[in-house]
Amino acid sequence: MNKKRRDEKPDMDPAYKGLIPWSKEEFNWVEAEFHRLRAKQKGANKSPGIHIETGIGSMDNLILLFKIFQGRYSDEVFMAHFIRHQQMLEFLSARKDGLIKEGLIREDGLRTVYQSVLIETLCVFPLTQEKLGPNGDKIYTFSYQEVVNAAKIRLNAHLN
Image (tube, rainbow, N blue to C red):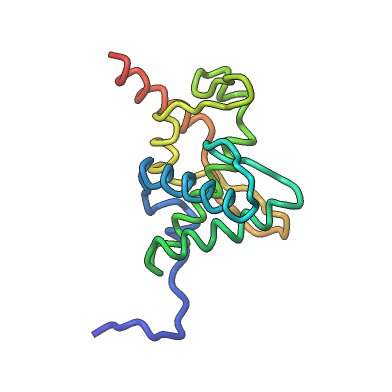
């Protein structure tokens, strides 16, 4: 019998490479819960939607998100979903202009609106693009062209 010892570290490759799929509904739940708890913490009422922020408050946001994921998911998958969520936000932020040109994101006043097929795609696609992180470590992220192609196929299927 091949039992894992408690002190053995789990294989994190599937999490780092985005091999554990997620769902758009779960992504939306996490985002709504984040905004609910953040508003409660700060006494502020920020408009719902995907939050992409940088700066001093971003560490507080990261800690809050970590607690949400840890409370929602089992030990086996919470880190995988947390990593995917962070990679999704990074991708949406870094690739926003291109995704607008592709018709997968649009600006509606001060709000950014994401095509649901884009979020669906990011929830299930593996992280196939490698890049170096700030400490020289390998980080996996989404391949822009693969995501755009798959999201457009889904978008066209929804339109037909």
